[in-house]
Length: 112
Image (cartoon, rainbow, N blue to C red; front, side):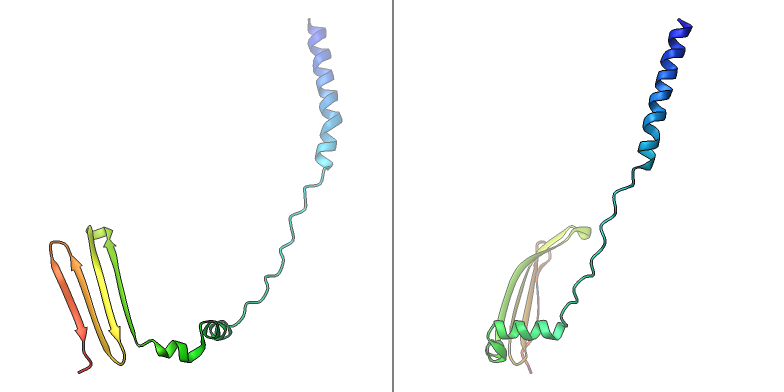
């Protein structure tokens, strides 16, 4: 039985010796070479294209009023509420915040 273990151990050692150098010599796959990022356009160029795409300065200046409604949440204080903002040129604004349990908070400016 001792002979059989020695023969098996010798065969295993020979097998490992045969494949170990091959595994050690296998080169690692080359890492992909990073490509240089293309240069980005300047912010002014992007804004210029955006203004042209939406109709130019005249289309932008034609809008003189806006209205925004939404909800908000302050998780740290457990608060949720609604928000409404109405504004118009040249200098009118009204902000209404509604908080359950507190009521309605209003703030505004009529230009005077």
